[in-house]
Length: 450
Image 1 (cartoon, rainbow, N blue to C red):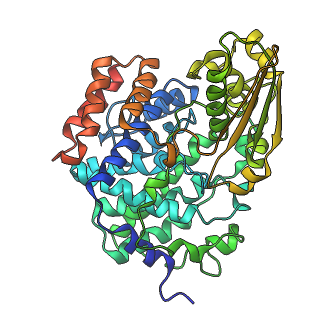
Image 2: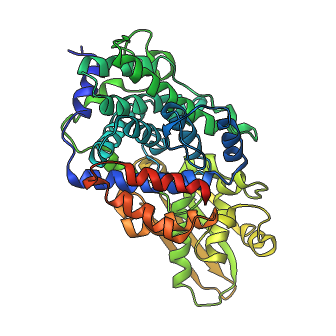
Image 3: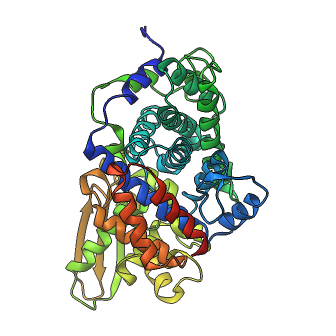
């Protein structure tokens, strides 16, 4: 029997002190999100969102690619953008992209309240904490029908907003309760060529922010929204473990468990890419392949087995395409996953690839996203490489310089001048000491002109 509702315990966990090193980690996630969100403007999704904003009242919120808008609408707009390219941060255990929802809300509310850079970063850490603690224990059956980022995004958004709005502990609990009353997001969108995944993130951000703004005005919400008899877990996450949400209450903040994506493809392909690159480096230069064998965990095969992708989405969810690109192009780039592909060479390499389950890797999932690749040449040479932790996971983390390179590459693709790229990156790195967000916000506005 729990002494307190889980939401009450979560508020206490979220409100622990945030250290300077955690603030810098939050700044890294903010930089990564910003690059992905700005890049999202080049898609039809982004263009539709910008068109939608034309009828939205102006305000003080930074809406990427547009004039300043009301901060609530800016949060919705920016949240829709960050995950369009599926290149943003990712938590292995929960399968969610926390930055896509938490960061846009934290940024908009921070601008609205006149927060310092440190307060913005603290809110991001706390939003991630709540979102990840819930998301990591939803259970596997939930994700069969629901988009986990959409399901738990409102909680993360509410937590970030509650922190910046200065809510009391009781109000914070109400915000989480009401955030959870409008959760979900069906996975049917993955079966059809549509833009709903982007909308899932925007609506999650909107729901959580609205819940926090109402709580500020003493609009009450259910404290037992997670574990109550008609709460989230009994309703749509029955094989989840709500009690585990509050274990290790004094442990390290969950943001440190989140991965960055160095490759512009589904996360399940990353270990295969890393293993291919490592194996290729060990081959005799100029070798011709005769066979490629991939062993990986069952979920990767289930989610990313696309031998002959035809669209960008299919290519990003193709283990075969990812391996072929890694072997033929060395370092996979954004354009390698957008048709028209380099059909002759890429297709010929894809045809050599066999895929099978590695039971040990299946058992290690989701703590590890592993892959083993064996390259065999026409000359009889064979090299096998195994990757247990993909590049970008906490055990093989990206550093700030590597994230900056990714950021610059994304902004180059949408025509943002190198000078503005450098200024934005500098502003983000200086946020822990920034007394206001004025300089950062001004530079965000200049993206429109770019």
